[in-house]
Figure 1 (tube, one colour):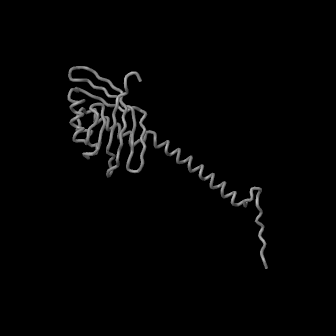
Figure 2 (tube, rainbow, N blue to C red):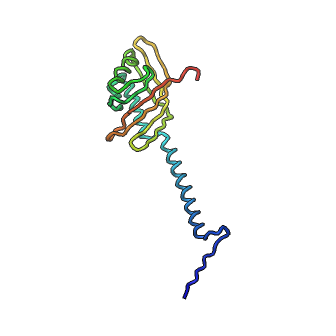
Figure 3 (cartoon, one colour):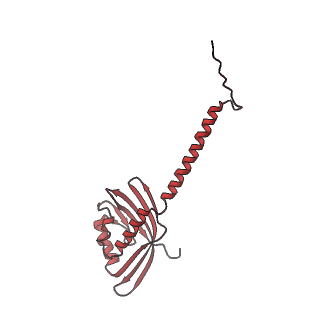
Length: 176
């Protein structure tokens, strides 16, 4: 005795169940893509942990010496930091005395402040931050220097700390 099954086909020649499964899979895919895009956009905005990290970083540099911000930097000899002057530093051992000589020796008071438009993006144990900053210096001879800066920091999670493994600080050219 043969059992007869009714497998009716729709106009496209497919079974209705297959069509339903394809629609469900497509809908789930769209929902998943929307979630991933929203999460990526959220990660690009100010992450509270990095907001605190950047504010503490600025406060450390505002002390006017390189001992305070040293804790934010990887101490490896092979890391490169780009600053306003000179072109680059290779490792913290070169960066600390170089920045001290170029920017801090003549300063009576400095203040570094991060802007509100902080963007932080994490990918596993690596993160990058971009934020406009404002540098203000009162020199020992009474001059006041103000500069708006562009800042990019590449951070690596080492143990429980985020450390800078690369940083780029620049000043926009006049007229922009």
